[in-house]
Length: 204
Length: 267
Image: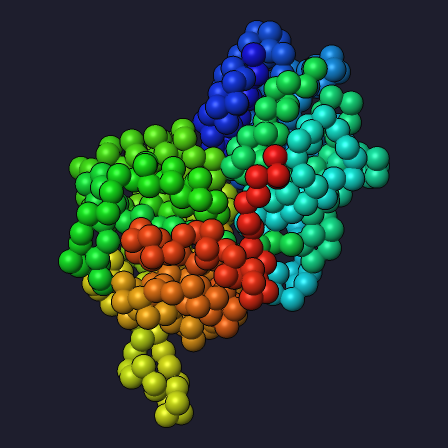
């Protein structure tokens, strides 16, 4: 069973439906027993970094996330669920993250290239820098759906899993042990995204 | 690189997809969920539902359509029409919409955009701008400055503001995207209002979706190229199956625009 952590930010049902469509049972929860029983844990999220971290503390989800990761249970962070795994963000002042990945979350600079709009919104390509089971069956340079104004800058280069060009190649996913986290939305990325969700559910 | 988006738009009235000219003379175009699935299979980049019922009595019908669509279609879904309160936004996002499009409520109270963006994030707040050209279509050639006036209530009521100024203002207020409709071109199928599209695209740093006027593939190319739009909204041209989403993408790609072509070998 896959536990999708409910921190009241974003469209959790799409993530759940995505897993169900590819044959993985998933529940939306913040019940600690459910999270402990789950074989896989997912943290989705859209919105503001500070609010997301606050909600994680308020709902007592920080310890379960750290425990899940320490146990080596497969963990997936999506969008804001990627960003909060970093040390800190500069969104609306400096906020501390969960520090699973050393590094910072930064805003795209205005004019990173000619006429680059912020948010970075739409379908862009991922270049796989670190082959891993989650990308099995997915072409390098496949298109996935993004919508974000901030991006992550990992301190450790070996955490980088994919890069995506937007004025410069920014890090669009990271991985470490059994943690994979992506800036894009697999649940909104049609076949490619569903394939990634399937691979995550199969990951053990 | 980031690709230009092709967004089929379904005008929904009383649970059915309809199409008309200038928001009148509506005719039935089918079941929204079924059409959404067809566009998903065809490789559309996003979908947009505009509820033109604009009455709160039918909110339940719309929420049902949104939730059934979100269960079956794994691409971004924008929903607009009659959104007045934060509770309206919350209900649509919970039903499975990824973005909501706000028009009249934003004009009536620009701080509503800020409130919605703070609560739900800018990325899901689209402001729809209905603009109508003031003066002759060729006024620019006569050396007269062309202006576009902002309209509300589905294009019926002039708001008095300049559409370009309004675009800048909603960006400041926290909108994450602009859905720009030319009331002059909507439904007539002879091309987007390119000067309007370009003026708004250059005035703001958030993405702009051009809407109103698509009749040929060349029109899409013009809006994304000359008009500098980030995305195009297309309705009747696709609903009538004059062209498919795939044909549109190949046409644009052949002319050098970045688009996402869905390949079987991607997965």
